[in-house]
Length: 293
Image: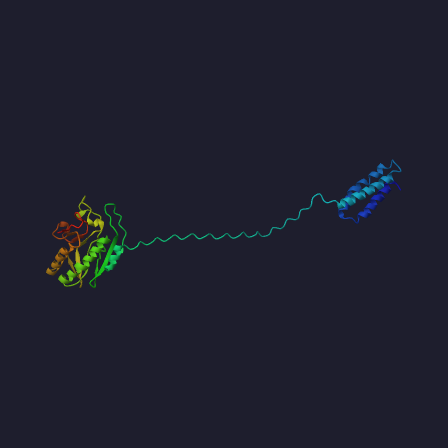
C-alpha cells in the first residue's frame, strides 16, 4: 500500500465515520481532510517508509478535529427571530379632569328698607338704574312709580316718574292721606290718576341757563298737570272746570306744604303757570324750611 492509498484509506475511513456525524462535522471533514488529503501524496513520495505513519497520523488528526468541531460551541449564539409586531397596547385612558367649581351667582341685592315701606303702602313700583347724567345730577335709590291703592281705589301714575325712593314714600303718603280724601270730599268722586311728568330731569331751575340744578335733577320732584276722577273726568290744573274743582286744587296745594318743602303753581311765576311743582329738596338751616307759593 502506498502513502497515497493509506491517506486515502484514512480519509475514506473518516468519510465513512462522518456519515453518522451531524452536518457540522461533515463540513469540517471536507474542509480539513479534503485539503490535507493531497499533501501526503507529494510530501511522502520522496520518503518511503515514513508515509504510512504520517498518513495515519494525519487521519487521526483529521478525525480528532472533526469530532472536536462537532463539540465546539458556535462563535456566537444565533439571535431569535423578532416577534411579529402586534397591536399596540392601549394607552391608559386619561383621568377625567376635575370639574371646575361653578362661579357663584351674583347675589341679588337685598330689598332696601325704603322698598319695603313702599310695598307696605300698597305701591306698585320697579327698582331702576341710576341715570348716567354726570356728577351734577345724582339720584339715590331710584324707582319708577306705577300705581297704588288708596281707600279701596287704585290711583295710577301713567307717566311712571323716575324718582328717589325716599321721595316716592312722601308722594305715596300725600296721595293716600291728602289727595284721595280731598277728592272725595270736594270733587265728589274718588281720584283715579294724575299726571306727574317724568320726575327725574337733569337741568337747572326753571330751565334757566347757568341756574342751580333743579330738584328734578336729584329725583326729588314731580310736576302735576292734571287729575283724573272716577267716571273718566279729567281736570287740568291751569283751568279747573268749576267751583268744586277749583276748591279741590286750592286745598290740595295748601295741604302739600305739609308734605313737601317747595310747592309752586299757577300764580307763583310763569314757569309754573300750568302745573303744581312739588319737591323735597332740603331748604334752610335744618333742611325742613318751606316755600309755598
